[in-house]
Amino acid sequence: MVEFKFIEYGTDFGTRDMGQKLRQKLLPLINGDEIVVLDFSGVNVVSNSFADECIAKLLLEMPLSELKPSHHLPWAQPFG
Image 1 (cartoon, one colour):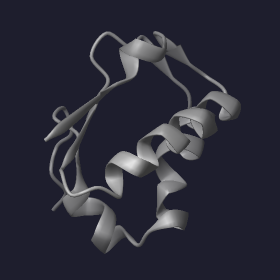
Image 2 (cartoon, helix red, strand yellow; image 1 turned 90 degrees about the vertical axis):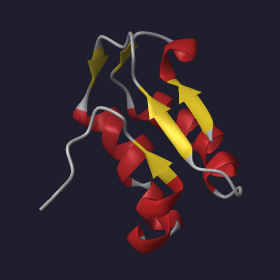
Image 3 (cartoon, helix red, strand yellow; image 1 turned 120 degrees about the vertical axis):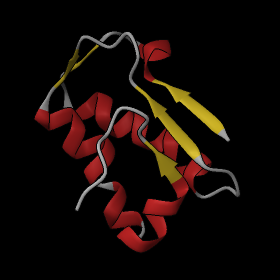
Image 4 (tube, helix red, strand yellow; image 1 turned 90 degrees about the horizontal axis):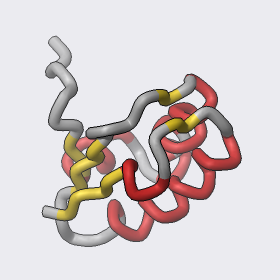
């Protein structure tokens, strides 16, 4: 398991530009063999624009069926 700690890049994430940069850092990890934990501990702000660019656009790189088993959001509630 690999942890991607957003706090290492700042505490406030509000721009698409930053979302794109961090998505590029995430992609090699997600394409690897280990589960990637997306750790937002200590982060104050995540805007819709950042989340769309960083997280949602991962779906353009891979289908949801591939993305779901490769990452983990420890604070997220399960769907359903």
